Amino acid sequence: MKMLTVGAALAAVFAMGAPIAASAATAQNVVLAPGAFTDKSSWDKVAHLLRKKGFKVTEVDIPLTSLEADVAATREVLDAQKGATVLVGHSWGGVVIGEAGDSPKVKALVYVAAFAPDKGETLQALTANGPPTEGLTAVRPDSKGFLSIDPAAYAHVFVGDAPVAEGEALALKQKPISGAAFGAPATVAAWHLKPTYYAISANDLMVPPQAEAFFAKRMNATTVTLQSSHASPVSHPKEVAALIEQAAKGH
Image: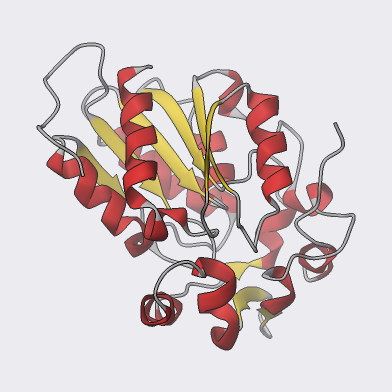
């Protein structure tokens, strides 16, 4: 199956009920890695739902300065966990969890509208062909090589199924990502080693849904498709939290 592109532009500018019962079969810890163009607060709704279910949840504050730095920040959080952990990544966070997910503490990996490169692959190579998505046409580089989404387009292309005011508030928290990070090759691809789960965003304007389906199929992931924008943790937190709980229980 041919890999579908996230856009040549990118390459160029390079309700839940009772708390869970304690069980040896259920991972009690969840670590959430955000994607590019946002910060860890994009996970707040999902984290709240999971905490109500009894999970210990940590949202990683990745710096977005390089793949190496983002992986280091995630490994530091993983090292602090006591017991089995579900590691979750949104968007660029999928690359990060693929590197950090070989930790013996990680029981399962959950990808949410996320990239999942194999060993040796880079996002730059994976996105080398085809036209850019609507979201990628709104990405702008600064003088230092960091990329961000045009604030005027952010609410629509990143989280178009949330109230505009919510999207605009998220845009104010936007964190640029180093364009050079997209050229860093994956070295671990932990999805070869751990059970994987994937939430496809059917209405994604940043990453083509067909590309997300490709990643999910290649990983043989337990997959759900959400009628969601790219930022499904913001617009569909109940569904995303449910998939994470499923991964924690090993179903």
